[in-house]
Length: 229
Picture: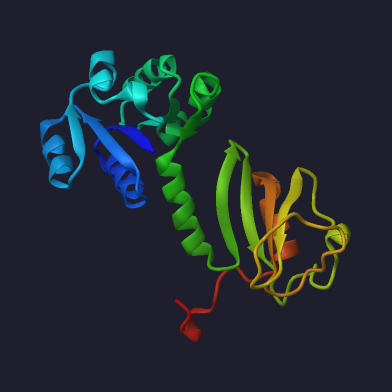
C-alpha cells in the first residue's frame, strides 16, 4: 500500500519508518528544510512544501494514495490536508494534541476517518510500565472510557467464578476473555476465571479502580525484590 505522511517530525518520521518496515511505500511532505534532508538521508521520498496546499499534495501523489497521515504539530495544517485528501476519497488520519482531545474529536470526527493523540498513547505506555504486568491500558475510547486488559491473580476475589457470575459495576463491560497462554476471544458465560486468565474490559474511569480490585486483586505490580523487570 502507498501512504502520504504530512510532517517529518517525531511522530511523522517514526510512523513512516514503521510503515516502511512492513513493506509499504511512503512519501513524506515536509516544509522544514532540515527535516526534509534528514528524512531523505533516512531513505524516504520527500516532497518539500506545505502539506496544506493542494499542489504539494498532488506532487506527493495524493490521488493514488491509500491513506494520508496528517501528523504535524499544526492542527490547521493537519485538518486542511485531510480535507483535501477527502476530495480524492483517500483514507485520512488526523493528529491532535491531547489538550484539544475531546473538543477536537467532537468537532472533526465526522470530517476525517481517524483521530489520533500520540501524546496520550505515550502516556498509556508509561502507565502500563508503572502498573506492571497485571494491568495494561489498551485504548481510550472517549474522554471517560478506557479499554483495559487485566490479568486474574491468585488474590482476585473473582478467581473460580464464571464470567456470568462476575458482578462488575455499572458502566463496565467485558469485551474479550483468554485463558492463560491462549489467544483472547469472545467471552462465554460459563468461562471460569483462574490465575493468569486475561479479560479486556471497557470501563468508565470512575469505576476502573473498583474493577481492578475485583479482577486483579490488590497486587498492582510485581515485587521488585524478586528481581522481576
